[in-house]
Structure formats: structure tokens, C-alpha cells
Length: 311
Image (cartoon, rainbow, N blue to C red; front, side, top):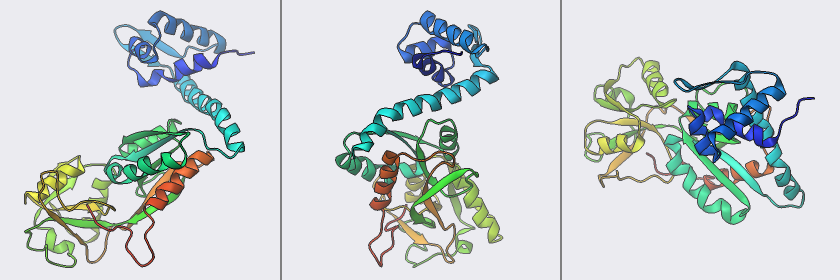
């Protein structure tokens, strides 16, 4: 019979996050010899070499070790659910929820959730990871996240989804732009002008697809990876940009310059901000409560546009 402890699983599950055994030992608050001994004991228990430890080349997991680390993370997560589920039987929500959020959405989606949810469920601990869509999907697949909030664009199969709010692509213009006074802007009018494009998955591909669908070639000035930098450059009149509409955003840049937002005519890039999680995993009541709250934060009063302002 194979025998190992939860502590051994905890130590080994953390190894993929560190380049060397010494770095892992520091992060795990354990001595390097003790960590090495724990790994050796685990390998003896399972009868497989799980990692290669070379001082010159650092730490490398074998294929068996990669599989074992992923399964260990899932087992630890399930073990951690036990106490939380007992609390939920008694009508309380208690324990961690690991929520991912796409970088471009974080400044709008997370503040109302982090400000309001703890007051309703003080025993739920929200752990946040912000990253690119690819990074978040990888973290979901590895079992490091309960759910992730992303754009409903180019998502792989095998995910359950829940819409948080609807969105679409809009034009971002300097306040003195020649089209700033228009109610809506046609992409054909913007295409010859300098485009400042957000360089991020899935934003970049979506922007290029929009031009291709209209038979247009964008006049790309530059690509930058941060939304606030995109807005700042637009505010200085260096070009225009195309971004997804977002609720609660401001009409000034970080430098205090004004930008205006205009819908596209015809409308384009219509999609939604959505929460996703693995198809084979049933979300806990805690996770469902967080997603319920996030959805309620962006629910539009009847007859109004949920997107409000744009950025």
C-alpha cells in the first residue's frame, strides 16, 4: 500500500512554482535538506522518480512528477474543502475562494467585489490572481483557481461559463479628435489614422479580426501591454484605440487628460465578460456566492445600459 502524508503532498505540489530546490525551500519555510528528504521519501512511497535535482541546472520534474504535482494539488484542494463543507452544512460560508481575473478587467471588476463581498461573508477568504487569459486558463487547468473572470473570446472547450456583464468594442479618442463630437464612429473613418493597440490575449487578435472582417488594414502606430498606457497615449493625441467597454471607468487618463469614448457603427466585437471554471468541477457554494455577487455588482437597472461609461 502506498503511504504518504499531506505535508509531503503540500511540499511536492509547490515545486513547479520554483526554479530550484533551495528557492522552494525558502518559500516553504523548510530547510533544503529536509525538503530533499521529504521528496526522496515520497519517491520511495510511489516507486517513481518524480524530479531531477541538479545544482547547475536547478530543479526539473519528470513527466511522472508533473502528473503527480497536478494531482497532489487537486487532492490538497479537496482536503481543504472538508472543514469548509462542514460549515456550509450549518448554513455558513467559510474557507478560501481562489479567483482569477484578466489583467484588463481587474481595475473595474475586482474593487466592488473585494469591497462588498467580505461584509456579506466574512469567513470566506478571497485569494486573487491577476494575469493574461492564457495564464489564468493554465492556472484553472492546474487546479490553482476555483474560477476566472475573462472575456468570452477564444476560450477552449471543457469550461463551464457564467456571464458577468455584456460588453463590446468602442473607439477611444482624444477630447479634441475630429470625430469626438460624433454619436458613433465608423471603423472606415478611423482606419487611416494611427492606431495604439492593446497588446494582450485575446484583445490583439480580436482587434485584428475586426479590421479584417471589414476589409480594412489598420495603420498601427504601436502596441502596448497596459490599458492605462493606451489611454494616456490617446489622451496626448498620438492616436486612437479600440477597447472593450467597461463599467465605472473614468473619462480622464492617469495624467488628467480627457478622453472620449464612442460606440462603433456598425457595432462590433460584441461579447461578454464571463466567469469560467473546469467542466468536470462543481463550484463550491462559496465560489458560487462570489460569482453571484460579482454579477449583481454589474446588473443594470431596467432600461439602462450596463456598460455605462467606457474605457
